[in-house]
Length: 330
Image (cartoon, rainbow, N blue to C red):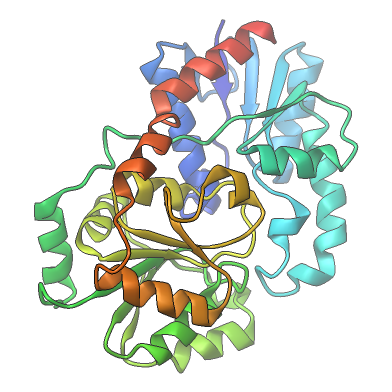
């Protein structure tokens, strides 16, 4: 058994969750001694696709002709495509039809959560759908006190300064408006948003929010995962205000780093996390502000250990073992 992990046009998604997921899959294969290749003309039994670009469709069709089995990862849904880039709401119905066509080319579909599985099932796809986390590399993401110091030194932050971070594209769906709004209401706290989106894709209203954000909000752009690990280590709170996700790899990273976490209370996380057990949740700006103040002043108990116990089940090695089982059945 040998897997062809297709990485074509990876550079286009390198800075996104899909890019991170592809690297996770590669490590899962390596850690579980599963033979794989990234070259189309090698010999292999199974093709693994992650993107919905035309090149992936070409590979899928050609692989079918050659009698190969195809696994298509369903990272995207119409629901999480909305409120993202310019014009995304207008073309969302067409996007839904396109991803249905792409995913239907797979012999099976893998999607990151039970929540996204329910959404894809509602699309009436005629292929088996498996829910399997993108996983987290616990050998890399771990609390590092020295890394925390490096982070604060790099951004000129004192040890006593309270720092709140978030990670994601400049999208309304990711909650960037509320992130900035909270910063305006809490000028004594430094808010840092890591991530980057090509300005040509960012809606004008979001770009204006970023351009007029108060001084206590910083937008350093995209950073490598080593720097991001330092940021998790050196921050006081990870604030994840997303309105829609299929999983949220950065949330898994924050859990692995044992960073205090406050998230928006949305359907995907209803059963995945309990408010006050693994993470804290909120729905309104008022709730977020109140819980931020209580977390940063120690008036709410720390939840990092219980959060870490949950994320341990999503370690890349365990995900690789489950992938291996799927391959064999396929």
